[in-house]
Image (cartoon, rainbow, N blue to C red; front, side, top):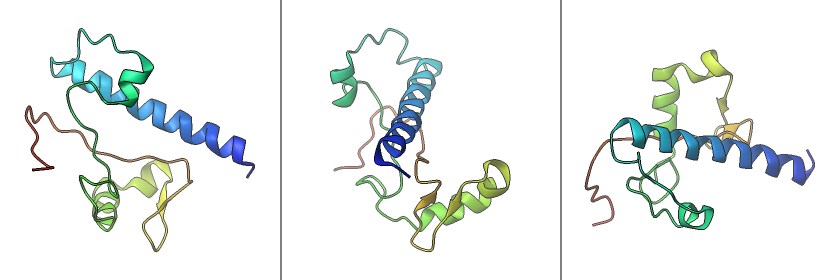
Length: 107
């Protein structure tokens, strides 16, 4: 797959994940008046986090296996895990959202 095509797919998936996170923040009542620039979004100036396996908030990639089984991800949307827990297709993103008002995952 050409790099430009891969990058477009990744960017689209990441943009959708960011949009969905914004919608969830609005639903929970603390994102309704957000008016951030793209740079502020990149710097995560908004309230809340969008942790995903493999990032500092949840380093253990093996948890994806449990979630994929519980949610029947492969059967439902066709995303699979490799033996090293990478998602395929490669432009896939995953994460979790929680309404914790004052997360302390880095303390």
